[in-house]
Length: 190
Image 1 (cartoon, rainbow, N blue to C red):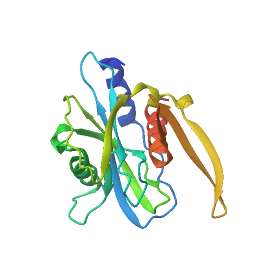
Image 2: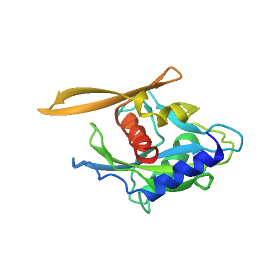
Image 3: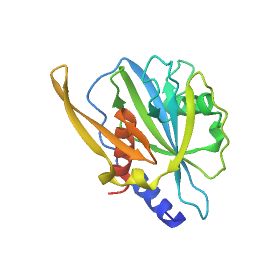
């Protein structure tokens, strides 16, 4: 994707109203960053993490950097930036936040607010291995194609639920992270 195309999809994102938040309520507030690397002459990339295997919630799953809101956090965008720094060592000043997506409620009872952010810096990572097993920098383009996402419907607690999956470079992303990425694609690239 060219710089012109990147500017176009970000402008479309900024000019559109986000869909409404999920009506499900959750016990814990959390925020994640959808970090996009935008460098001249290169295809855009997205930064994802694989959670450590010993974590209580969603162990070993591929996710967006972020986590639980702390009382000291100014707001949820601060939570997303702080958690990204704690998990992968990228300072909050490296990112420009462009907007947010609807909250997603996870099966672990978190209400997660995603924030769209870009950076034009070449990132170096310093992982907190207590939280993150690895970082993946993947091409953004496959995540922007809605036909790359696959849905699976099932019943949970008497309600029909749908979970999404996407595979990019042999990495399978599913659950809330795939739903957030699919919402992003749907929202900015219609």
